[in-house]
Length: 419
Image (tube, rainbow, N blue to C red; front, side, top):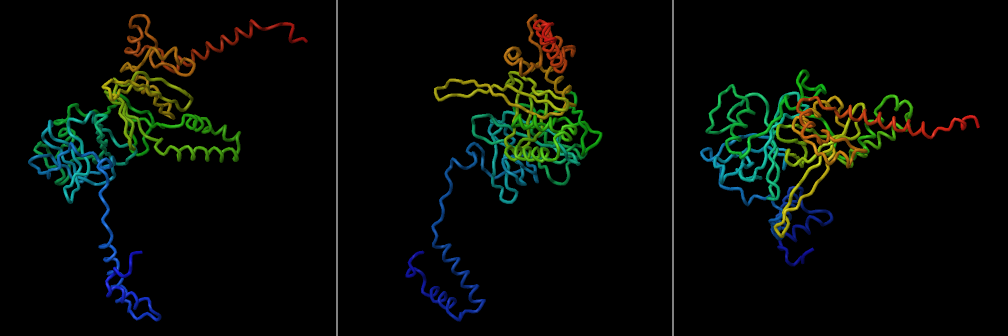
């Protein structure tokens, strides 16, 4: 504590009266005393310095000038999930060269976060899964290496209601909220917004919330492949009956432990015309076609299968040299009902790498066959007449069994059984 002599004498005398036995101060006087003590301590405590600039959100490239409807398109009352969960308004500068997209506090107009238009690499619009009412997520991916954060905001389905959009872009009352926002954004972005459609991929898994509609996403896990395999195998009722209640309890505990260790496992894959999106928890991921060097399958089981992406990333070193690295990302526990649709999507866009076939034949199978005959493999993939992944797996399994039987026949000694 500080030296009592530095405290005001009136405050010290009032404290003595309040702490005497019996106390002299009344409840009202005591309440006022506590308020004065709090104010004195607050005034005496040195103010904390602001955090270092390096810990603040990167906003150096974002214009902090107050937003006005004549300088920017403004969309109010939006729900943001990334980089923070908050209701904000969106300011879209009309200058695509020097302007930016900003999320602002609706009360103070203070900029919470933003990205310059020139620093936005990709933007996608996808439906929010498992919602009774249609909603749309807009995912904004900044250029890597510039320090900007991803942005995710959600808009409702249906038409624009009330005075929520202030823009010089003309729109009618019959236009949907999504179409208006997409049109405003596409006027400013370098690349048009990408969105899924049933021609690219339509899930065969029935939706629980909007029956009769085709989902354009596939559920997947990203994490421990062993845990996902264990989950898929032990899910069989027959195996549960064989294991009994004791081992089933052990199984439940292991699955819960796996999910607690990897809380962001369960998400959604969207197969778009120009890449694959993984969302919706932070961080989002977008894999453009040019970054995917190969795609392969593992653990192709009766109910589920795993999808593996080899992603090439480039980075610049301090000596201005460009370094390339390849990372494998596994998405597990995808429903087998979606296998045909995903395989057709991969074949349609030619996402394969011939070098993977021999390297990982024992563990993984390449999406498209190795093309050694001047393009026959690609033609077969495009026409849809190529051998499917399940057929290849079954054929190779049969070949292995035939080889084992031939070896047993060669090593068979007729006289050994009678000894």
